[in-house]
Each structure stands twice: as C-alpha cells, then as structure tokens.
Amino acid sequence: NIELAGALSDYRPHLIGGFADENVNELLYLDLEQEGAIAVIPLADQLKVEQNLPIAPTVLPSPTEVNYPDIPDGELLGYLHRATEIKQGGDWKAKDNTVKSTEIDQQLEDKYNFPFCDKVSTATNPIDWGELTKSGNAPKACLDTILKRRSTRAYSAANLTLEELKALLDFTYQPQHYIEQGLDGTPDYFDLSLIETFIAVSGVNDLEEGCYYYAPKAQELRQIRFKNFRKELHFLCLGQDLGRDARAVVFHTADLQKAVARLGDRAYRYLHMDAGHLGQRLNLAAIYLGLGVSGIGGFFDDQVNEVLGIPVDEAVVYITTLGRPRTRL
Ligand SMILES: Cc1cc2nc3c(=O)[nH]c(=O)nc-3n(C[C@H](O)[C@H](O)[C@H](O)COP(=O)(O)O)c2cc1C
Image (cartoon, rainbow, N blue to C red; front, side, top):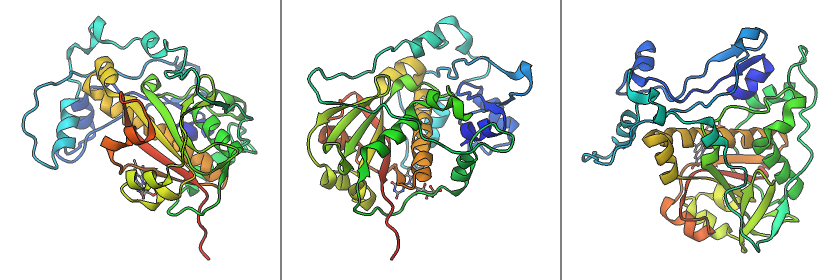
C-alpha cells in the first residue's frame, strides 16, 4: 500500500531491510518483549531533486545460527526475531558480507523450465486504472481500492476467466507496465529473486485444471500437474472453504537454504514481507476488477509440495486464493 500510495503523493518509498535493530527499536521506544521493527521505509520527496535516490539493494545479511537452545512453545517467533538482528557496529559492512545488486539481479531466466510441459502465455494488456488524480500523478482508483479493499470471506461457484487471471498476474509481477499510469515501475522488494510463484487452477475458463509454475520473465504459465485439486486444496488449507472454493490458488515459495546462504537467518523476515507485498498487489488488482481474494497463512507446510508437485527445495511462505465473491441473497 505504501508503494502505491507513494506514487499518488509523489513520495517514493525506499524499502530498507538491513538496519541496526536495537537502535531503531530504541528510537521508537518499543517494548522489545512485545514488538520489533521489521522494515524501515524512508519516503523520498520526488519533487526535490536531491531526494531522487538511485535504486539500491535493500537487504543486509544477519548471522546464521546453527546451535539452537530449547525454545519453549510460543516463544519461537520472538526468539527468531532476536536471533536475526543486525548488531550496531557489527561486521555487516565487511566486504564479503554485503549483498551485491548483481547477485540479486543476475537471474536472467526464470528458475524453473520443464522442457516438454504445456505453456500458456500470460502476456496481456495492462489493467486500466482509469482517471488520474487532479494533480495528475497516479490513478485515483488505486487509492479508492486501497481504502475499500477487504478480504473475501466466501467464494461463489463461478469461474474466473483466463483474461482476469492474466490481468492479476500482469499487475502483480510486471510493474513496469504501469509506469504510464503513474505507478512505480520498479518498486522496492527485499530480494524477489528468492521468491517463486505456483498456481493451482481449478476453475479458470480456457485454462486447463492443474498446477502451474508462473514464469514472470517469460510471462507464461508452465504446467506441472494435470488435475483438479479442489479437494486437496481444501485439506491443505486446514479445511478452510476458501481453499476449496477458490478458482485459482497462488503459492509464493522460497528456497530457504539458498536464502539463508545469501542473507543469513534474517532472510526469513525478507521472504515473508516480499511474499506479502506480492500478495497485496494481487489483492488490490482483484478488488479493482470486482473479483474475490483472500490471503491464507494457515496450511499444512509439510504436505503442500508433494500434493501439488512444487519442487522440494521450495518452501511455501504465503498463499493467496482467488475467485468470485459470494454475494448474500
Ligand atoms: C498473512 C495473512 C494470512 C491470512 N491467512 C488467512 C487464513 O488462513 N484464513 C482466512 O480466512 N483468512 C486469512 N487471511 C485474511 C485475514 O483474515 C484478513 O486479511 C484480516 O481479517 C483483515 O481483513 P481485511 O483483509 O479485509 O482487511 C490472512 C491474511 C494475511 C495477510
């Protein structure tokens, strides 16, 4: 939301994931037992030339811990957060430790290609967000959608169309198509090269049921499984009807081993926030198009890969369900 609202108000949010945790928390008078900063986002005033900052990597690595103490139930999250802190005056400035932008950008091809799989192009016209605001900097409908969006609580039995799915993917993964509409074509993420996208399709007109890998660079869906997964999705989403009734379920995944090797244990923070950022773009586009959408964080981590054919290296970090909202009679 900050990313899109920034475009509307001529402020460019710069995402910073690498910061001295203790100092930032102290500055904010946070009760460390209860809270800790997870991101710092300076807003650069685009109308001031000196604040037009170059795009730069936003992450720094933290140490990686391999010897864990016994952690009582309910304390794991707090422990993980503290264990992934960057210490003031630490060695994060050391040359070998800084994450180079080339390392992040080096992937020129999509991670997965399956030589003989069916491929469906997702190239499409960008979503038309309509009129710009009076000051003319970005579409007003974007702001209205941020303000009115809600997570859908139940889906109808009606299918999505392939055009709708393409539009949602275009807005989420191809921000460069929205520069002409005043939106940021290269919004900051922590490290998108660590995030992959899989989609289980069970009700999209003109698209075969099954599980697909979404290749954002090639802009195509690559089919990895051929069946209707509705029953399995219901189970995988802990019996939640949203999982069963959605017409398409998007899985954001990450290779944890690779992420930790690059960014230390702090990667776990970055991955979830990046997946959430993508999920929110899906969410806003779906609401704008009159579709239904809800995130799902509750799912069986240990079974989701095998059932859907998602490669074992990929850990699912966030799910977004899509469909048509059920309207009350
Ligand atoms: C990370 C995340 C995980 C979520 N997981 C679930 C879920 O498992 N089941 C569900 O019904 N809703 C889930 N939601 C939707 C939330 O219930 C919903 O976002 C929240 O109630 C706030 O409502 P709003 O999105 O309409 O503002 C999730 C949302 C997020 C952001």
